[in-house]
Image (cartoon, rainbow, N blue to C red; front, side, top):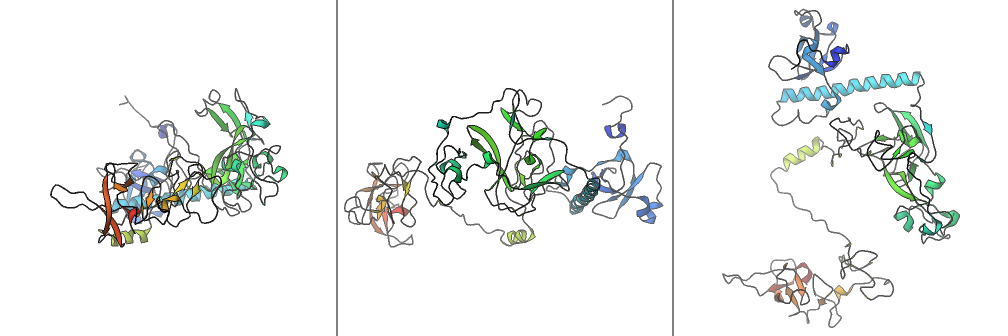
Length: 493
């Protein structure tokens, strides 16, 4: 405890509560309550006549019509973070206090908007300009950082052709674009028709700097921008760790504070319409901003800063998105809060067990034979997700037309298969499957002898449990001599 007289920082600085300020007030043993500082001329007459000392001021409590004369030591300012606080709105909070918190948050935002609008009008009246910075077109290395330039023999060459409709474009199958490599004009087969040279040619979207209501200066597009379109490169000073210790800790940073281009004015959002992508351009790494969605002209352009908060201090996020986390550096919420209609539907359906929805992939990612990834040949039979390497199937070229994989033909006669091994392409028709398929003791899957020769043999049986005509059963018995039936989705007729 401090000795003698002690003054807080606000009192030392001469900071006093002002009219229309939102404050927290402490009265007796009651909890801290949100209130608004009122002007004595606007309060009811009976409150004006109440006894009060010099230096006291009236406050109006939210959630009620109560007033009180209080003094500076009994209040402290309401902050931005208080409007988004979930701790105060937790379980056990009575309805009156909850109402007071909601009203205080709404009123605080209204006053903030009024203040920002006045500031915006004042800035426009005085013709204020963005903070000074030096405009540069390309990254500038600082300290020991080097800008790499690749040899022409090292630059990857795509398979696009000069005669293609949009060579190396967004809708093309350009391998360089897929791997975030920019084509080099001297290497690309499409030559001057190549559409994958946005960084080198600075094919930026047209933007303008403007003053926002609550987040300082921002950037907005002048024309419509399509999803996936290149917006701008993020340009600045490229610094190493030694240089950026006073800025931020990373191996390599692009700092657009003192020097950069218009992209430095793009604000953060927890639900952005742009994203950053790291591209390799002529052997060096460059950062570009690309549209995540279709953006209409006049819309503010934003991206997620993905900041890492160091220390205990947090910066309040003012993006206003429905999934806003409240602070910069925190992960955005996955889903926006449900509206009243959703809450009513949930109440009506309370107590009912929800059905689990199982999502299945349309196509598997690995070859069904070797289990590796890569360029695959997919089966065209409806409902079959299997994919294969052409080499694993001993194919010299990709099959044309409606090709069906060998999983659907009997290994013995080549007719349409009725039962399948779940671990390989072995499959059999109704005449040849008996004695060749087993229920594995390892994982209970239907398999051939190559995977579990000690498994239980299966045979054809009339099924009454499943929605089909025939199934298979195991000849396994429990100690009580009761038969156990195991069904496999891949062995049903």
